[in-house]
Image 1 (tube, rainbow, N blue to C red):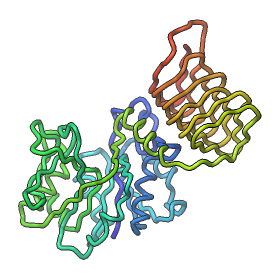
Image 2: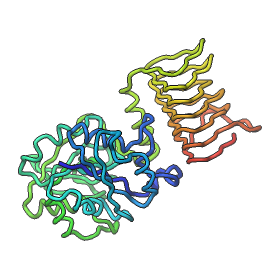
Image 3: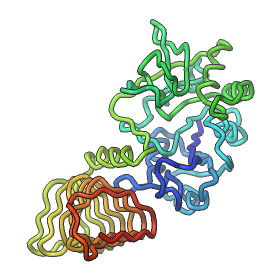
Image 4: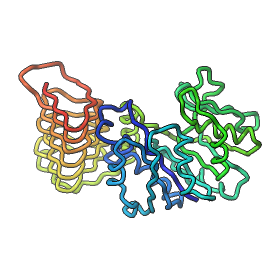
Length: 355
């Protein structure tokens, strides 16, 4: 069995962060989100992986992942070009997949439980597709599945205005080669995209068996800033403490905290976990729970809570920073003006904010 990971799309809901790189490289707990998909595939025994590249700086994906050897997998890069829908992306992998069954994993999704149980037995089954489902509060934002009394999939609709169920499709699918013929026989949707839901519906309509798997535990599609921060919180809940850097006297550390090599936690600082601080950082101030700070960052006389700092940043700010996404090489400093505390930011790479 092979795996394909989709890393195209423009990430418009995550701008300005995605003006300077693909959304799949945004770090969750200091680890690019696409790496969680690679881990899931590898842990399920799938090591031959195709990465579908889009037009938003695909070279950065290649630079980050290389040939896959650092992750224990073999990576082949497949160019999709302009994103024309998930089914179009799947079709670009036809030559890579050949006749083997495969997992299609959206590269901005994170699944707590992994996919081992999902993959188990699929190769030897009668099914042409297997989909993951999870109940959601507002299914209008997702592809939605309708099941019959026997829990068989009978209908799929992409982002319906009037959903017939609350079961959303999680961005992970299993297919046999039959999916490619189905894709060849669908037309673009009202969004002018080839929808994977239409392709799966085509399988159903042509008497192919499709089964479903309801996901237990959490699943996150990290398409919006609030989703990225939620995923960061969920991952940080699972960490174990590890301190490799230097912790000076009179530092208070509470909860589970990871501190990387060559990082210095200055005297008088307070670190409350769960939190992750990368390598070669200088921290002087307060780092609150659910915060991930990337490598080579300086936090000086500042307070930050429930946020992601992607790295190479300088934060020297009198105001407390909360619920923020801060891009690479960004700076937040205090100027002459004084404003109320408790500010939130989503700022891209190389930004400078003076308060």
